[in-house]
Image 1: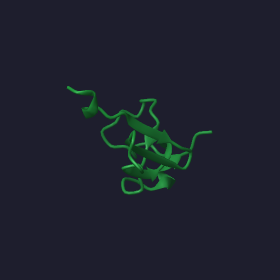
Image 2: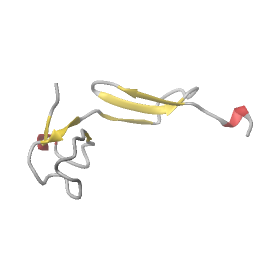
Image 3: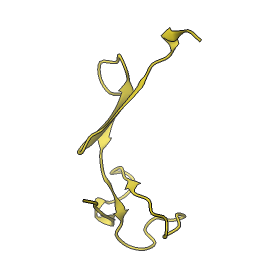
Image 4: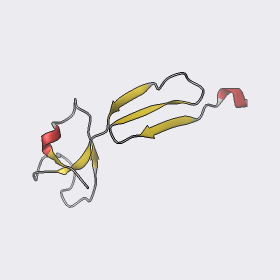
Length: 72
């Protein structure tokens, strides 16, 4: 593989927006809101063990922001 075929992935996890793209591009290829938290109520996340200590990254299409408690 030639070095010209390799592009570095750039991810900007900002406090309000996440942006992702490739080094050298003029603009990010993906931009979406940063919403991270834990489930507010038991049983909100189906098929995930409730004792799992995971933070969930949420897009507006997948869940209401009100379903999460936000971390400080």
